[in-house]
Length: 462
Image (tube, rainbow, N blue to C red):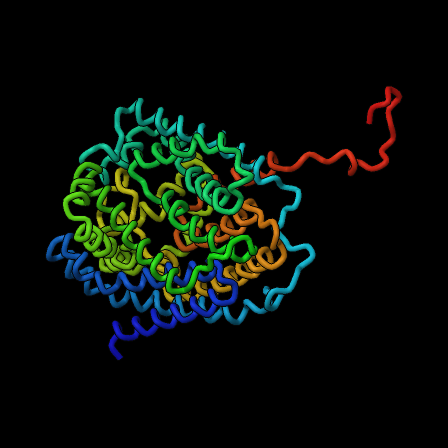
C-alpha cells in the first residue's frame, strides 16, 4: 500500500476520533487538541518535497528521500499512543456521561481567580519591562529588522542577559492564556485595570520575533466559548464543523506569522493590503512549506545526516536537567537536543535554535525503535490521565469552572509534551514555578466564620 495513502487513512481516522471525543462534551479537550496537532503534523508530509527545495538540490533530494522513514516512525508512534490511550483511559475516567463528582482533583476551591489575575498582571509588567529593556539596551528589535529569523537569536550574543531574557519570554504564554480564559469565562468579574499590561506584553513578545506565545491568544477564545456552553452560561454551541474551520484559520495564522518572520512587518502588511485573498491563500500554503509546521521535514533532514549512533538518553537527560545552568553542568550544553540536531546537519550551534525533529524524533535518535514505542506508551498513559482530570473538572464545576484549575491541567499537557521535545523543559519549569507562586498568592483569606472556636489571647485577640 502506498505510504501517502496510508498516511491519509490515519489522518481521516484521527479526525473521526476527534469528532467522537468532541461530541461527548463539546469542549476543546486536551485529547481533541493533540489529535488535531497530530493531523496537522502528518499533513505536512505531503509538502516535504516542495519545502525541501529551499535547501538546494543535493540537500533537498536527501531530505525528500528520508521523508518516508520519518513518516513511518511517526505513524507507528502515533498508532501506539492512540491504542494505549483508549486502553488506559477507562481506568482514569472516574465518571461516565455527566455525573457529579464531589471533590475532583485540581478543583482548587480555595483559589480566587481574580487574585491570581492581579498577580499575573504584575508578572506581565515585569516580563514586558525585561524584554523591552534588553532589546533597548542591545539596540535590536527582531520584528522591526529586515531579517527576523536571524535577528531573533540576538540574545545568544549576550550570555550575561540571556537567562533573564529567556525567563521573561517563558512567562508570556501562560500569562496570556490565563488572561484570555478569564476574559471569556468571567468577563464580569475581571478588574479592567488588570488588563492594561496585556497589550504591552503582546507588543514586547512580538518584537522579540518569537511566536509560540500567540498560541494562547488563538486557542483561548474558542476553548473558552466551548466551556461557556458546557457550564450553561451561553447558548452558543460550537459544532465540529466550526472547529474544523477554526483549525484552518489556525493554519493560516501560522503562515502569516511565518511570513512576518521572513519578510518583516512592513512587507507583510503591504502584501495583505494589496491582495487579501491571495495573501491568505498563500499563507496557508506557506504554513506547510515554510518553518511553521516543519517538524517532519526537519526530522527528515536530521535522518538524512544521522550516522546511526544512538544517543542512549543523553539528550533527554540534558533536557530534564534544564533547571541547571550549563556552566554548572557542561554535559547539558553538549547534549541539549537543539545543539545535537544542529551538529548532525551542520548548522551553527551558537546562533541557531535547533530543529524540531517531530514528536517521536528525539526518542528515535536516542533509543531507536524501542524509543518510539516507549514514548508512545508514555503519551498514551499521560493523555489518558490528563483527559480524565479535565472531564472531572467539567462535570463537577458546572457553575464555577476555575481558570486556575484549567491552567493546571494544561500545564500538565505541556509537561507531557516536553518529553517529545526536551528543549522546552526549561520553559515548563519556569511556568510551573509561576503557577506555584500564583497558587500561593491566589488563595482566599480565611473567613472569620471559619476560624472556629479558637481561644482568645489575654488581650482579646485570636
